[in-house]
Picture 1 (cartoon, rainbow, N blue to C red):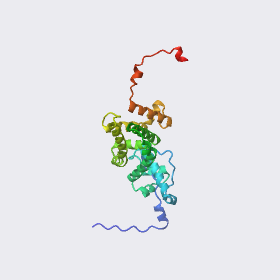
Picture 2: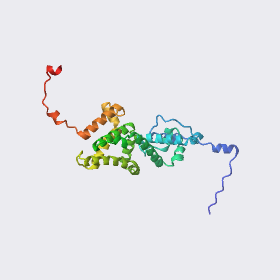
Picture 3: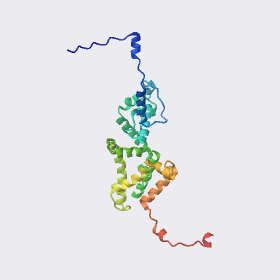
Picture 4: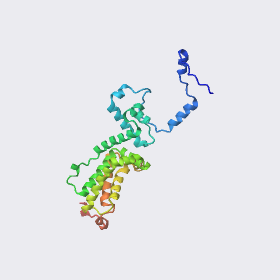
Length: 278
């Protein structure tokens, strides 16, 4: 019969202090830790926090601490995607401890949802298309204003587009949450404007979803890929002049097409005379 193991005797005095001291990590352990860290995104400008329990000041400013975490998570989710970013990296970027993430939000998924709500509240302030803005406009005019406002909102804060692209590409369960809470109502505004324009006779009949998809994609994806435009053409879509130019061009293409007007295309060329120069 196996002999029952006796309880370890209490440790006291110098022996207790000696056994409590942690052993230094070996070279192999440190190398493995460094290799794991190298696989994660680098937070270049993230402020450093000392180790240990959260300072009392972090708990004394719950709203400010919460907002810091939300802002940091929006930036990182837009840059790297939900799956790559850890709560520890979000806390580091916010200049806080990881325990604050769990204290305020519990899970990374809950943090992501609250970050999206904060992002969409900002987007609502940027998307300046209130009933007053649309009052008195014909259906086609409303659709043009909506398109221009969508471009301006995406240019002002492209994080929304980048996050939506990531979630749609990975077909995550978070995509359905985005659709149900934010995307579907927004697309519905464009759907209604398209139907009104077709019903009024100002626009020829076509599948509503095709038109809405074409308009919103052109007005949104360009800002998710803005670095390509900047590197290839030297045009920064974050600058107001470039945003205005893009809005004007896109609306002209969508509503008037690319073909030159028949009169301008067929008009005979007339040499300039002295009378014209006077």
